[in-house]
Length: 96
Image (cartoon, rainbow, N blue to C red):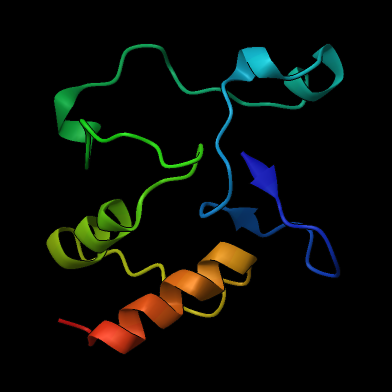
């Protein structure tokens, strides 16, 4: 996971590029908190999707919003470049 640069550095950029922990140096990995290796099916919201340019595709965010009532279009969660793009994408399509 990558934190956003700028004045509000502690905003987690869910919309940005996702990289495996093996793609980072030791100094970054020491700061990471990785999830448990085994995840129960009941804790998994969405699965079986392909990353697009190492980013979560919009249909995953749509599923979170429409199926699980997790709206990531709010100002606090989308203050990143791709977050703003996704918010615009949702607004232009309608909130359906």
